Image 1: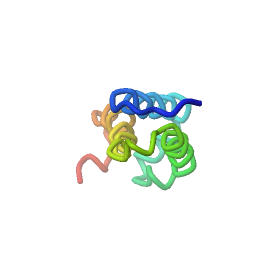
Image 2 (image 1 turned 60 degrees about the vertical axis):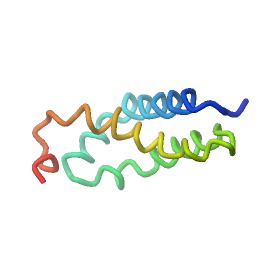
Image 3 (image 1 turned 90 degrees about the vertical axis):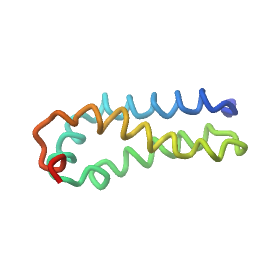
Image 4 (image 1 turned 90 degrees about the horizontal axis):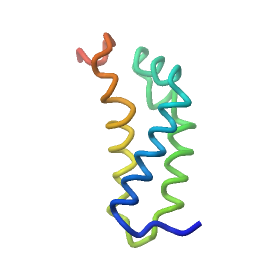
Length: 90
């Protein structure tokens, strides 16, 4: 597979991977948010997604590393901010 060497494409890939995680692991996400162990509960899925993301980045795009973390927050966590979950009150 061709490596990504463009910041816009790197951001788009990160968001696509986060969307896939959100789509296929909704119950784990909700449990993780409700129990305040989101990152532990989804560690395998997040690690797999991050690994795939990093494998596609050109070494010249080190600044794009943060795009994956931003996508997790923007695509998975933030849209669920309206739910009555105790972690939002903290």
